[in-house]
Length: 367
Image (cartoon, rainbow, N blue to C red; front, side):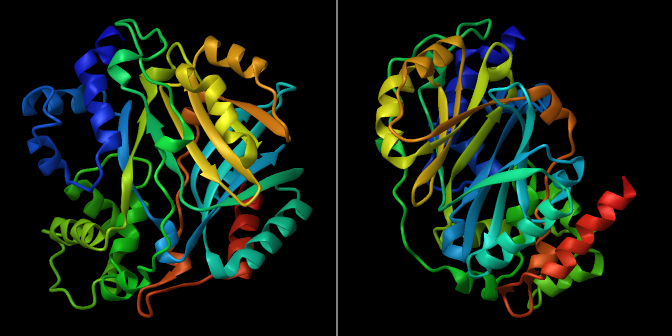
């Protein structure tokens, strides 16, 4: 997969990751800074690396009244891949070479205790043996200049810059809940688009086929146009931009892991700066999600990163897991069940423990 590591492709991904405001696919291709190659070339990359070259907008969930929950589930059953609050799931290998499941969940902030109670009940019902959890605000993915981090075969080399905590975006306290009431359709757009790169037409088709006639409850003031529904999607992205909810584009470029690995760390927040001082130059890409005491960190690197981690001495606890790419990529994609967790008529989040547990029990019986 030599072509996947052309410097022009990696420079394009660096720009995508660092762009400070949301731009739609067409506008992005018109941007002079993004044009390390012509429009036709970028479209060819998208076609050639379909399923490998993924990037998608990540928004300020906190401003919409939502909270991140990072779960490590030990000895989890396959049913947990369909947990209704999950937006991403990854299989991991722990220090004992056991297989654990990471689930990145989004939940209404006001239902945190109900969420914990649901997890405890799922544990008692043997959906998993035990779990660890970190609640966090919105995270940040940071990147080196990727074109300087790989040779043409995809082998990594230390970049000219080292990643640091200071490169991440600051947390801003703001309330954009009014957006949910003024244009509820942003909710399906956010969550159906999360984790994958879709055109406006593709996104509308997925939403319309999934919701059926209920889609119009998310568009109460709009003229019904089931054929030209991409106009609703375009308006949703514009609204997200107008309300300044966009944070950044998240990159998931699978060729980076052809010769590399991704490490998941649970670490005390007081050790974050010293961690990156130790390993920052060996990480082309990193993600940070900080809680009140602990943080979840995702690091992309190679054997040099592992050796650097061996030299790092944490003052608090540190748990390390290795991303199991084959099992994860072969598994079903997580999907946030917004249709069960959001009321488009009131523009408010809901949480029905009984309904969530009932759905999970049906999945367990089905298996």
